[in-house]
Structure formats: structure tokens, C-alpha cells
Length: 265
Image (cartoon, helix red, strand yellow):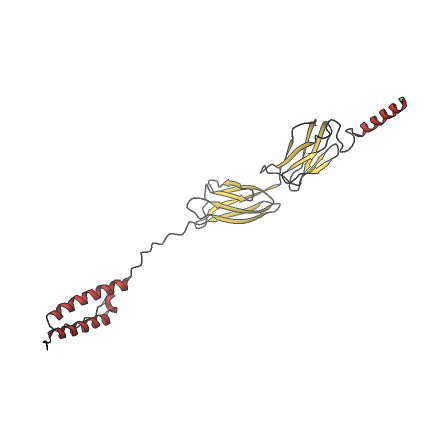
């Protein structure tokens, strides 16, 4: 029985030796079930960095998830984390880990390049001060200086750059940043001047009404007195298009006037 106990104890000791800090990627008994948690974020935008590699000095490594998080099984004690991602400077962080320790946050600084230039009046080429320049995606914002110059620090990628300010039409330009600084001049134009237009006047209807009213009144008075109506005058100017209408009215009035003078039968 003693021999069995000794053998059992030796077996337990051997098993415990497997879970030592020297074993790559294996946590100690104290840290088993309580892995090291953390996240990796962009140092420029504070957004999560997905797909970053997080490697512990004790051996295990992992990739960050879509939200930048990671989980590593490490032993208690001093642990150095090496973090890297495409487009970013690598970073190392040494911590003293123990079970239940708070999450570790790692910041990676991206490779950024300057997008710079000036906001300029298209007409006289004068720099425009105080204009807002926005690059998306990322919503990176700056304001033009007193001479119209501006600068944005951007990672590699394709951006939509919009500039706006008082008294000018806003403008949007697409630009690609690919491993080198980019110079971009943003030209703006004032809004087009409003053209004042008078409301359209129905001249044909208005003038026809005036001509018809005047001709009818004059012919009515001559017919009532039984006299011969004067010849219709040919209007000039805007009324030049009404002579045929006026002559028709004259003939109608004269015909009614003659009937009025005929004695009853």
C-alpha cells in the first residue's frame, strides 16, 4: 500500500511538472480557467484593430477578433506581449500577470502619411482660411490655416475628402494614400448668382380684353345714334394683332344699328 501511495505521489508530481511556466503555452494551476484578456486599438482613431497578432513570451499566440479583443492562457508571473499588425508599428508590453487580473489594452501606432495642400478660391487663387476639411472613412477633420493650408495624417487607403465654408460651394474629392505623402489643392467656387425673373404676364389675354372692351363701347354709342361707325383703326404696338377682331365687331354693331332704324311692318 505504501508503494502504491509513493507511486501515486510520484505520478502527481510528474503531472504537476507539466503545468509549469516553462511549458510553452500552458497556464499554471492558479491561472487555469482565467486567461489573460485584452484588446488592441488604433493609436490614431482609437478603433479596434482586427487580425493583430498577440504573442506571449511564454509561448502562446493568438489573433485579435473583429472587435480587437484577445484571450491568452499564460502562467502567473512576468509576461511580455509582442503585438503586431499590417500597417502598424509593432509594440511590446511587459506585465506581471495573476489570475483575475484586469484586461490589458495595447495601442498600435499606424503608419500614417500626410495629406496636405491648401483650400483656394478658384477665381483669384487666394487661400481660404477657416474652412473645414474632412476625410472619410475615419472622419479625420482639420481646419485650413490663415493662408488656406491644411494637413491630415492618414493611413493607407482611399478617402473621400470634403471641404466646406461660408460663401462657397462645398466640394468632395477622392484621393488614394499609398505609402507616401499626398499633395492636394482644394479649389472652391462661390455659389452662382441668383437671376431675378419677373412673373410672366398673359399679354395676349390682357390686350385682347382691353381692345375688345374699347371697340364694343365705341360701336355701341355710334349704333345707338344711327350713324355710320367710323372705320376701325388699325392698332399699333402691342395691339397690332387685333385689327381683324375689331373689324368683326364693327360689322356686327353696324348690322344691329340698321335693323334698329327699320320701321315696324
